[in-house]
Amino acid sequence: MAGNHDQKLREALQKVENSMPDQVRHRIDETLSSLPERNKKWKKPSMIAGGIAASLAILLGTGFTNTTMAQVLQSIPFVESVFKLAGDSTLKTTVEKGLAEKVNKSAADQGVTVTVSEAFYDGTGISVGYVVQSDAVLDKNMNTSIDFTIDGKRIENYGVGGSSERYDDHVVLGVMHLDVSEPLPNEFDLGMKIKKLGESEGEWNVQFPVREISSENKVILPVEKKSSGDITVILEKVTFAPTATEVVYKLKQPSDREMELSFELLGSNGEHVEPLSLFKKDDTFKVSYEPFSTIPETITFQPQSRHDNEIDQILEKLKITVGVN
Image (cartoon, rainbow, N blue to C red):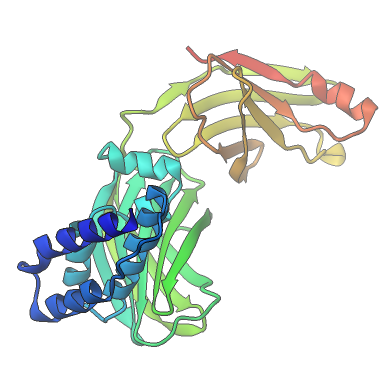
């Protein structure tokens, strides 16, 4: 029953009430009194996603200090991690395995506070969980302008993506994925210099340490070569990581007849993983694909069909299948 879940939420909030400042305790009292007693039946997942998330929106929308916000995130069941709320299943798994690094660092300007809650780096890409709080109503469009630095040096060539979720007019939770073209050290300070949040211009600078979690990575170095006519593909390195499958390959073809090719990655279990980002330097490419649900026994790296029989016959000869174990 939903009433039972509401009661559990009340009990969980009451356990942390005594350790919080008066401002927070007062707001929690308001939250507890506003929770309805329902007679209607709900499925348990809906209660976690609806009731807990709604309470989070109430708690975070009151202009708490950064320290207090972090305490609230860590204290309420199911809300101790932005990765768990706004991340995909892979990031949720990293939290459950204790691989995500707690950060809880903030920057405030123009009545808006940006807090980085946690980060994860598996050697292929960096994932960052964040919270945006605003005294005023946040813009519907939360596009950002950000510069990234590694140990104080600006990153020139990178890709960034992610997702966010609005919990109320004043709070947005999100996850950002950063993929850098150049190799990164095992440990470094990542800087985020945000110049624009939606329509608000300001300066939100957050810097925090990041270290590689590589215990679950599997790397193979097949150096497998296939040629068809004057086109050659060399598969050099494949990294299986918790958040991505990274492929490094060389593509050699005449510059005057260069064909734009993209490659599919498939596992022996029939799983097809989608590309996330691509970097090119000369004839070397680095592509990050989605992670495999389980590491397959073999992988196939093949050019995507051009829907032209003559061309597809040429491309078929460039298909590479290699063993993983």
